[in-house]
Image 1: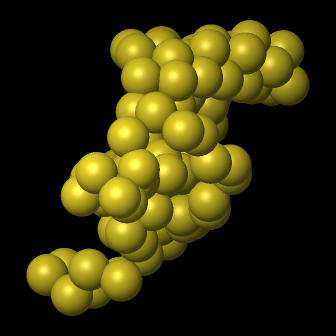
Image 2 (image 1 turned 180 degrees about the vertical axis):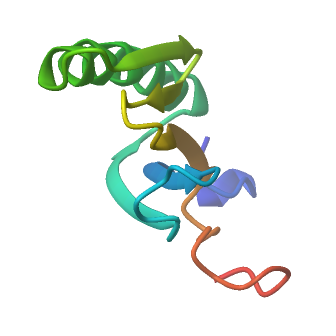
Length: 106
């Protein structure tokens, strides 16, 4: 559909979101990074899930004893020293910026 038909065309943005949780986290600061755009929500979410699996595989190899549990497009990471992080790939319309303060949109 196009603008002539009165339909708003959205682009979907895949964001990488990581933050530390619990007392063992070395850096509890939230970090958001836009990675790339997609024409549909479905293609973005499918790519996010595949990316989480691939990154989890790499993360497991980097630190002996590290555990990484993947659920959908989210990885729960626990290092042997107790540092605990959540890394997620999230898809939002290009009209939304998750870095903005709550309620302010872009």
